[in-house]
Length: 381
Image 1: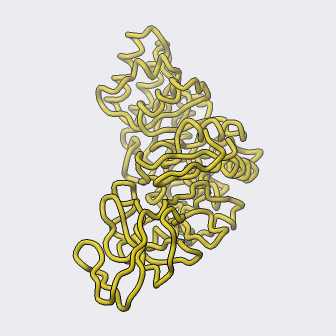
Image 2 (image 1 turned 90 degrees about the horizontal axis):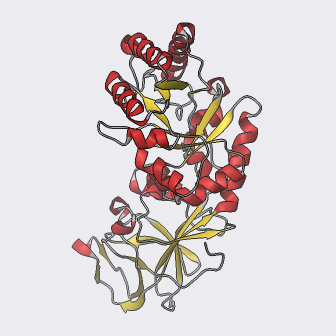
Image 3 (image 1 turned 90 degrees about the vertical axis):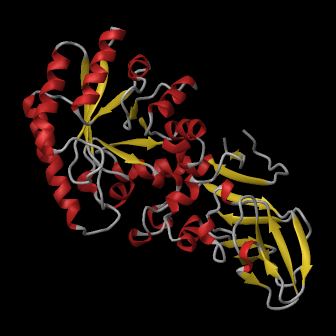
């Protein structure tokens, strides 16, 4: 992992020092009531799962979380042995490998419990299982009507030594919308479903409901563990609840490219596919070698902000697969000049939130979609 910038077509600089500081800030927010799970799904939201997982654990996170079992098993293969919850399983997934790797495996329905029990019998081990309740998100999780049966069958499998119920958990739908009535309704539903499981005999090691926005704004949802995803990477879950700085967080990723070409263009010159941008005067154009194959949203064509040549410019015309153009308005730059798409904002560069607004999406998507063709360069490793 490099500390010294190298000449690259493009780079996503990942500040692991900022990530550690963010984890410490989140720990301080929930202490002493709850532990922090560092969510590193989707290659740590595009930041690099293994380096970010290690940095988060160094800063005091006690759990890791992934979506797919393959993400979780890759962390184990890298030598990371921290408690690790994986929650998005499908029929035929590697349940036995999960048991052997000591994963906590989320179960939302009978089919999943059947598969994990079968894998436990094959392996001769005991599966660590966390039961997920659907308290109102309407996505993954066991609905209340099916909860008694799932809990009962899981307890029977536990009595047979095939599983250990290590957790009960759920996920909030609207925690990023302060005051939304679903928040109180889901909290009540979770307390009821958790209470049922415990009265039936479950003794979970961890109970958890809070995601990043709940961690930042809803202490009543903390329970034993909070799952911090986007907040750990220094991004606010929603502009409505505050900026990263409001919560003592700092963006971790800085995305930039080297200007590949600077050329003069006359007035009336069309730029990029469809000529949706036409120069209004004699000008200079700069070519930035990043496109939608690298994760630059095509929806931000004509709107995406870029800091280049000391000024914030706007993408001129359509974002193409591998490149886009900025109108330099007559400024003369040398090829190799840096074009910064987003970063912490300290030096006047746009932020991921600025790009989210330009693309009519959320900042989560902006960082997560940065493609594998863009090298990750780690600082403060």
